[in-house]
Image (cartoon, rainbow, N blue to C red; front, side):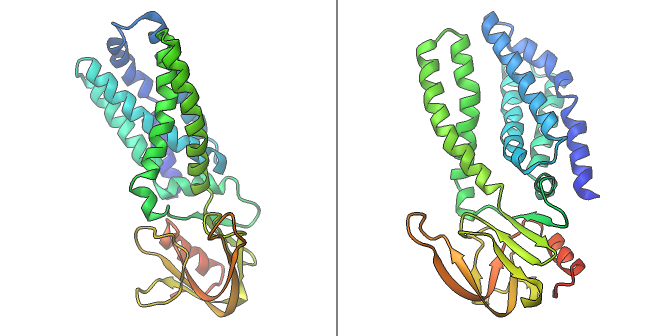
Length: 290
C-alpha cells in the first residue's frame, strides 16, 4: 500500500541520520564548551529517538509532535553543515533530513496516523488546512515551538540563566497555544462510518455532523458554479461537493462566545487532503459518486 510504503521510506531515511551526523556535529561543536556540547548532543538524540518511536505508532495524538520535530532536523543539519566543513557526510545528512521532512508532510502519512486511532469500521480522511493559515500563522506556530525547544536549553547550558529563563517562560506560554492550534488542525477529518459520513471539524462546526447514507444523493468534485455551503475554510486546491436528497441542519461555530448558528443545507463543500481516496471509499460503501 502506498500509505505504508511512505512510512517505510521515512524510516529508512531517518535511521541512518546519526551515522551521517556524527562527524558533522562533532566538528561543529568542537569549539563549544562541554555543557553546550552535552546539551546539544543529548537534545539531538532525544529528538531522533522520539521521531523514530512516533513513526512506528499510528496515533492521531502523535501526528502533531511528529510534524513539529521532523523539520527541526533540517534546521540542525543546516547549522551543523555551516559550522563544519562541507563533506559527503553533511550532504547525505541534509539530503536525508530534507527527504524525511518532505515525507512527514504528505497527506498519506497523516492518513496513517489518524487512522491508528479510529474505531471499528470507520475510515478517517484528513482535511486540508485553511488556506489563510498557510500564509503565515502555521509556519509561525512551528517556529515558536522550534525556538522554544532549542534556545532555552542552549542558553541555560551556556550559563546564561537570566535570558535562558526569560526565553523558557515566554516560549512555554507561546508554545502552549501554538501546539494546541496545530493539534486542532490535525484532528479535522471526514469520517466514513457504517451509517454514512461524519464531518469532524471543530474549527467550523460545534459538533460532528453526521449525514446518513440514505440522505446522500452524490459525492463529486465541486463545481465553481455551485452555491453549496462552503465548509472548506478557504483551503487550497480542489474540493468535493456532498449533495443531499433533503435539507439537513448544520450547527456552525461562527463565534466561540456566541450560540451556534443553525443553518439548513442541501449540499456542502468539503476539502479532504486525499480526494481520490475519499471518492474511492465512498464507492466502496455504496455511496453514489460521479
